[in-house]
Length: 202
Length: 202
Image 1 (cartoon, rainbow over the protein chains, first blue to last red):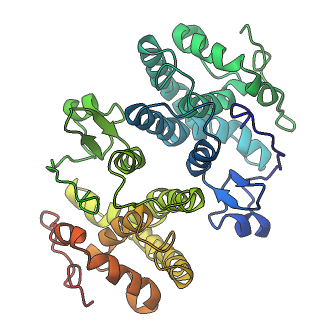
Image 2 (image 1 turned 45 degrees about the horizontal axis):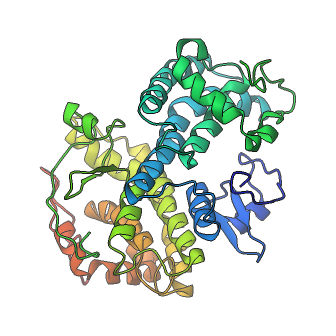
């Protein structure tokens, strides 16, 4: 929303303990949810992004041709579903969510996530060797979806940036955008961020 | 695509045994994939539907306002992700995919899926009591996404239609559309469909 230059208020909700209020807004109990100025309730990350794209077209974050938009959407699903289940659930799910919910991390999942992330970083490198940004020649929701996942893994210092210089170059560009600043200031209660988490020169 | 009155050729691919050809078209190895007339390759179901909506706007299958489109997209994710993991993976994954890949169905998963489906059928009833179709007053991708999941469960006769008359009314309307006819003629090799699978008066 900052990339769209929209102002907004954030409300903190724990997705692992959905309450009645959350189910009333979204029957799936999932986040994110957007309540618009006219009190319209929108749920599902992709539906919210498409809605923002339709109602606030500039700056364009989805691409200017049908083919680029398809590529943006394919990559949003890639990072929101594939990266999420292969890496984020394995590392952040174990190291952050389990800590917050009173469980103990299972090191087998963490190891699997740390192995799986390499394919994704190589894919980011492959894409950015061919294009300025992941889906084309300008920043799109695909870059934001990928950065949202990676910043979580970066919080615990588990992204092997040294082995993936091109992916690192891309992430450095995303990280330096003003829209990322509040995210880099985020703190998970009781778990300090890795020293390089908010460092723009990592 | 039939609802969009587009002609197309189908190619059968097994998503559980992705080959080099499949990975070349979609690096995630997932289906569906659409190769357009100008040889452009599109992957990811939602990206393909949005592309068809942009390039073939009539008939509209996504809704005519930003709010209805957001609702369509929310429900497409609901059925494509939540229903898929809570019901389809549990029932069709065990009874159909495992049979095809040489495994034995685990009855605990099948039982869980048969229990979970009731919430989804109640939700379909709740939505269609308020609207003609799932996302609004005309058929959208949401109805097609839901019917795609349900027809798979219906193949093995595991949808408790008798307990959910409003959901059944909705499915009867989808089932009677000409676009559904080839799907109702589909046969999973070695596993006969339940007698009511293709029956419009079930």
